[in-house]
Length: 103
Image (cartoon, rainbow, N blue to C red; front, side, top):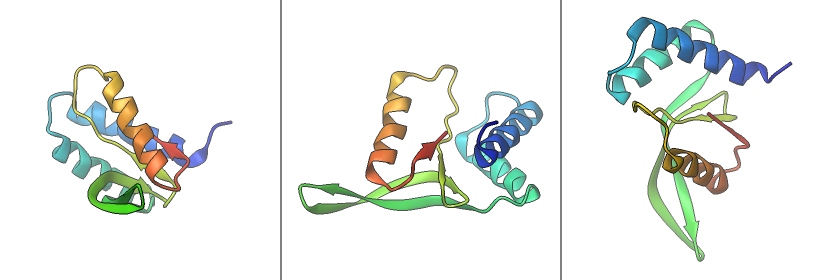
C-alpha cells in the first residue's frame, strides 16, 4: 500500500486533468488543484516561500508551488513532456527543505 497523502494528491491531479484537459496555464491548474484539495479535505499552502542556504548566506525568493499536509511538495508544470530539468528542480527543493516527498 502506498502513502495515503500522495495517493490523494495524485487522484486529485488526475481528476483536474480529466476535467480541464491539456493546454491550460499552470496558474489555472494550480487553482483547480487547490479547489480539488479543499473538496478532499487536504490542507495545503500555495506559493510557499523557502530560503536557500549558500555558504552561510540565506537567499530568499524561492517558492514552492504547493505544500500539502505540510509534508509533500507539489510542483505544477504545464508542459508536453517532463524534461530532466524538472526532476532536478524538485530534487533541489527537497535538498533545500526538510521535506522528504515531492510530486
